Image 1 (cartoon, rainbow, N blue to C red):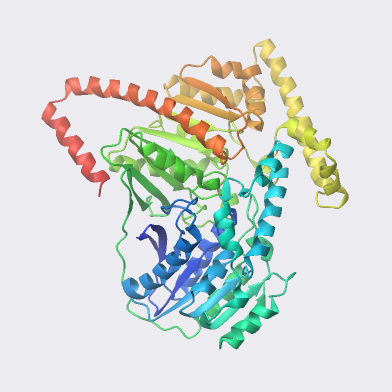
Image 2 (image 1 turned 60 degrees about the horizontal axis):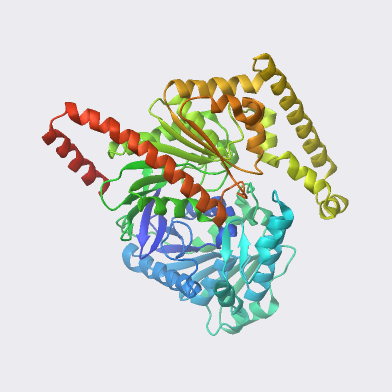
Length: 599
């Protein structure tokens, strides 16, 4: 990894190092679009730096790891001001002679409005905000219709003036500000040279290109060869390398070498927490954000990725969760495992990292990192694939003594074809498919070819296997036996129980993980409930990624009780140890720990 986490005002970012006289400021898209494009955005930054261009990726206020309230009525203006601040920072702190702006979707529009640079690259730019809002509303309906409760989800996504996309919200004031964007009315050229890469199915607005030329800009246009890879999807496609290389070629043309300054890392701070990006691991290939409360932390929560999403979580839920915990005196590290987010890239992409038992090594590296800072009382928290990784880590590393597993649907190893199908299709709960089978909208998707007959066959096959497995599990339960994956699952959790590991199991009431849990542990997860230190709870109305406001509030409340109980037990253990340790020694260690935490 050739990057350093930085703070610019209230924004968090990563500077990708290079010794060139032209710097690049990357203006990402927002919300769900930005989350899904994160991996391609990261790869583009690496390639720009490799071409000799110091490159800054950053999160807008209220987005990603930055500070700021997304509900602020002036948030869009704050995004514009942050782009200006980033350009100034590249010129003044890093010392580049020229700056190029590279923007995606809404970020491309904001970059054009700010301008004042030598080069501008716009990838599928939003030309008129009103059209963009219509796209977002349609996307919100489509995504909501694919959920566990389609009718209720669509109603929630489109209620009122807000637009809700997988936990991200476009508020009414934000939408009003976006609606006013119209690049055909630019008053000055944003840059001397402009490259517009566009969706092959939609040519760039001719009035916008004419406007740029009339303002004196030299304009090039190019069709994106793989636009699909930059569009939102639960499992993003591999980065469109040919398109990214076209961006690099344009941005780097004519740039020269220079002696570039290395900036201080900096931190983001409020009255409740201090937060900074960190790089760790034996080869410094792992990245994350350490969030410390003001004062000595009571304990620490290690937060793992959910699916291919990087450490901010869907709907920015992990960021909000980490910062809320500081009010209770808890520290946290939200990390990316190898191949995901800001950690080192794997050749096979995020898909190659999910449900791999060997990724437990990354969790152990994070525990090493926390130990070195005196943060040893750690609970590992994960959702879905993150919960599976937390389980693998606990089985592999005996330092793990507390687990919070949300919507876990894999209770042991998964390999080969089963893993590939899970990643490809993400099977939902059985009743969800039954509900969709009764929906005219679902069958219309089949008729139009949007859903293939092969996909239907795979789903039907998976449901039959699930029912057969459930029947076999129930029969085995009656006979006092365990079979197949149930045997492995029971052995795994029995091993953890024998070690005294505290476990909180959370599931949404419609989540497929509840079915799998009953398959492995018997009706109502009877086997698990009989183990010591295992708590099982259900969250009514929770979505799978726990990104909705309802889900977040419920999880925070249940985690608060779980963590406080774990801290109480840990405190009792600390009291026992203090009885055998000298008071001066304990005080010295406590002071040293606090100093290390605040470095």
